[in-house]
Image 1 (tube, one colour):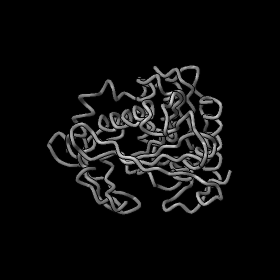
Image 2 (image 1 turned 90 degrees about the vertical axis):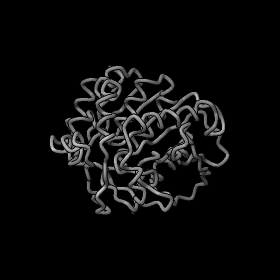
Image 3 (image 1 turned 60 degrees about the vertical axis):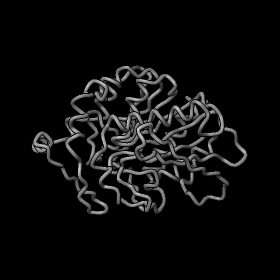
Image 4 (image 1 turned 120 degrees about the vertical axis):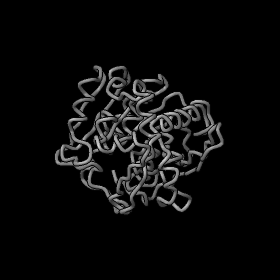
Length: 287
């Protein structure tokens, strides 16, 4: 496995937009398909907090998924803060983002695959790969939607409320923004009070561990035991809640992004290990 996006194989990449009924900003993404292939399955990559579809290894992983015979989809949540310039220039949207919005947008992508608007045909076999916060979204979507045939989570969170301090929650209760630094760009990124309102009002739907207990589809839980952003305890919590179709894969010493940086400079050994496991999982459970 090369995990090299410049490998000498021909891939067709088609951009798409899904516009919400309320007229808000669209979900934008790409579908990659191996040239001449007619995939019967699709795999969707769900990015995490402060993530975006062109981050690091995601395009290279999509390429490998396409070469394995799937329609590979990655997309930007509409309020992830990334503007038309590809940078975090839309922080006004980032401020307004919520978990429920992301769940609805992920469902819209799955709907578009299932009804044939993406991928060129109606996809009956759909897999999800969710990273970090996107892993939590993928867990909830898989629990809610029987059209999802297989799931992989990478360094996934197991809970939402515990991610925040008492001081941050108090600020939201006062109607103030909470600002989080982007470690790569050093920007201070605002999260408005409506974020916490959504967490409270939709606490049952957004209970990731409860959703994990309802999943019956094959699920591979991948986590680095050197993760300093989301502790490996989250992986153990998800695995403890999950049913008999789940497997836990711990990557010795791996960090939150499995040794990869942005811009992408090629795969790490940890990424090669994870990518091989992802491809094997969908080869077994979506074919």
